[in-house]
Length: 219
Image 1 (cartoon, rainbow, N blue to C red):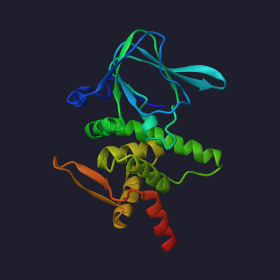
Image 2 (cartoon, rainbow, N blue to C red):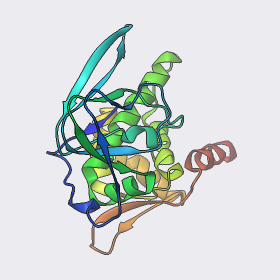
Image 3 (cartoon, rainbow, N blue to C red):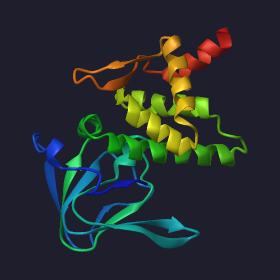
């Protein structure tokens, strides 16, 4: 479950597109925990409660006000399952954001990428804990990049990605950079600059995780 609030994201980058505006009446549900998710939402008017079930009891995670993005994690998790419930506390308006729309957001806002990376890493850590394994930072970096690639996002801002991965894995930035340059040496990613001379990471393999595992077997 992730939410990106007004302090982090501006609505301006999406104002050029044709987006579906949805009216949500008070007490109506936007989506429910455990349901399949095929869209994220931008709250433009009203208030939305984000809650989930913790120890068989309802726990309110946040009360969102305009302008906030919510529900975006369902577009990035493998199972696409909602990890929280969103309910309107008053008559509200939301913009429906598809996967393609979210990719545009990610290109415009490194903070969106940072939020997604944080949640994906936390999910990865939780999974490895359940399997009684110690999460490998190197393989974790590969898994996160692989998820972005699988969702069609193959270009990430270098500095924001390194910083977010370092914070999420509680590792030094130089360690994350070492893993990224190792992938570059294998030809699996490219590290360069975009048209604005901003450093970027280009993921060259759609099945990045599979390619890394094959390289390990051949080594």
